[in-house]
Length: 219
Image (cartoon, one colour):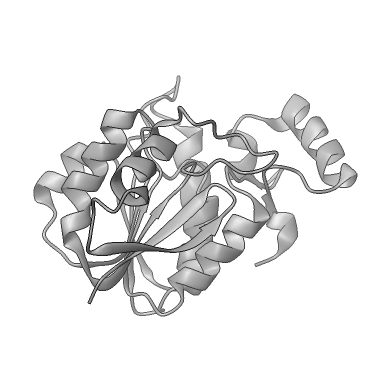
């Protein structure tokens, strides 16, 4: 992946910060990403991006809940099996101009530039999309609604489709030095409640990178 195509969070050098400052002032709207006038704004760190690439290698059925501009989806599609299927779920409901929906268009444009797997877009909330879902999942990435009850709902409704040996990734789910999550974040609390105290016996934490927590199902 070309580093200039994504602007990561948080910014690791003074040059990154200066570029972010300029782009935030001048080109924050996603229409500028869609028109390729600025890089994608990632909502994750560079280290987390490398973790996406690492854990997606060879996976054939990946589901991401919460896509935004598509930076994490780009990493997943780049690393996963070329004959796999990447399903991206996001309602894209916050656009002021629904006919244009620049955020959605920016994401579609970005993801198309990476990898070769089949990509399926589901423009619905995750609790709506799951009603029609019946396929096994190799890697499930939960990064949608961060309310505690919503995180639990995504886990309860989607984790049953993850195959033995499959992965579940939670974003914004871990407090780390100089990071943005706090102990009261919904994903942080959900991961603590579900996995830190051993309640979910058939899942174990296999990696933690900045705010990202990676779990693997037994089997």
